[in-house]
Image (cartoon, rainbow, N blue to C red; front, side, top):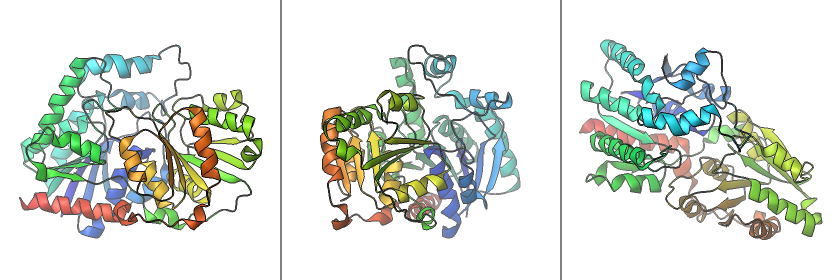
Length: 422
């Protein structure tokens, strides 16, 4: 059986968005499905991750042109996106992305990739038969592109949503008009898809509310790949090492945590003296180093920066415990992808999170310690308790198999088999 996959973010692009599809592609052949991927040529992006190329080295991958801004920037020689460090002014790129383009291009600027995808798919289908089409978002325009292809070629269609759509935390909707347009497009995709796979229960619930076909909906969360942890050896730390791994952005704002460390320095300096904090990941806020220095925490906090996924896993394994930050609005449905790798590392997790779906997941993980407040005083008190807990005496009672990327790919193939039998 053969599946044609359309995805914009794919290795060697880094960060969490590229990992989900890469892991599916890695394990699909084990379950009788051969993937062919259509993606975009190099774009201007936050980070690359060459280690993820190992996961997709055996897959057929076709890379096309695009008229979208990130591809055009790459053609002009700009391969990375700079952070916005001056909060008092909005950069031209931010203005275009968050204010202007949402009025001009729906559902997002990647819809300008459409003619090139259609040409690539036409050429592929002229020479061979595929049993199903899979589209993975964001960007959500990939589903609009997939919808046109499905209408023309009548392929069974699986849509994969790593994040929500209308009203989502990742979607720029400056006015109510954008929200209504996204809601309309979202509803049309869900109506036409043969299967709708969501990465969190919240996304699944939101999509089910606009459909009368509950049997087409499936939840396959993000997860961890056991092979990633096989080559990562446990370190021997002289100080208690608390590691944050992942992108630092407004949904994972570490400033309240840093303020809690300042309070620890003032009130229980002996506790702070035994602690080392690591930040491993891309700083999309662009100000972490400055904020650490301003608070006098340079001797406590190490800023490692972005690492390839294989290296970031080593930091997880070597740490004594892991730091999770998830700042959500009441309507947000996301669960940070790093949550599952933290669980896969079998390490204690100190979570500062008001994300209800994240906290619901962690409530089943015995090694998680959650505070839903971003008040530095409360974080300080909870962190003290966390650091004095004897974690070695606590056993994990969570079924980790459901977060295993191999098992999750098997779930995906079951969905593909189902829609192909219709």
